[in-house]
Length: 304
Image 1 (cartoon, rainbow, N blue to C red):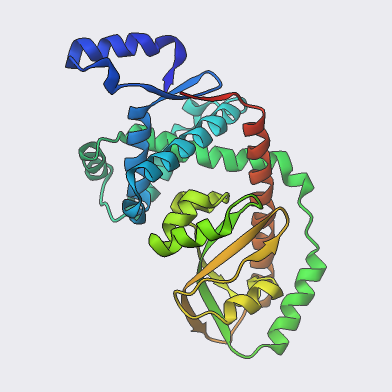
Image 2 (cartoon, rainbow, N blue to C red):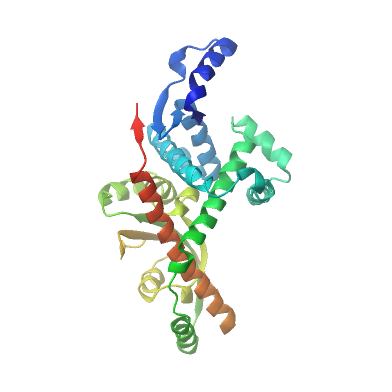
């Protein structure tokens, strides 16, 4: 992402150093004052594939469109984040997030991860900033909307106790999601899933923050799910996808990746805390989606 005022200097510099034809670097999109080139978008596609290897199955034009939208989202989030946070003051947090990232991907050290990224044509410093922006965005959303979170703790306590008293077996589900708005062509979405994968479709179509990692939610206990959702998921077999589930302002597809039975020994207080946390995160995710939509609507985005 190249600031507008230095863009042409950058082009001249590239021409002098590498003797490339000017047609090789071109402006694709301008987001407010930020310019995106085809090189930015191609680099972003490499990053997204690192996060989600299922994206390799996409056609190049689909991957580039997905990458462009990802960069637009990052630019708008960063513009908002820097109004409240000084990124340089959170460098330690950035290092912590980076370590979690490369550890989760199986790298033993930052140096080995950096070497891998360099071979892929991607900078570890850019990745660190991406991770930091996303974390600070979540902090910003929490501060902006924490007073609007409505949780009936007594209701949750009663539901947990009732569930525990009435339940038979306890299950834990490994889930992925695609949250799509009412304007999405459902047939086109299903065709895309069948031709590629659920994970690739989540990255392309989902408006949830989980789209960044192929829609993965992770492990969720059945007693942490709303009754309607739990009923749908309980009837799925591993690898199966639910019918569309209506939610406010959109629809939800759930994929059951894995299912396992747990010992029927539950700490009630711990489960209540988990339920409260689960509901809080659900509401914050909704606030995040709506806030981003407003940012995008109020931005000037030009395609070239």
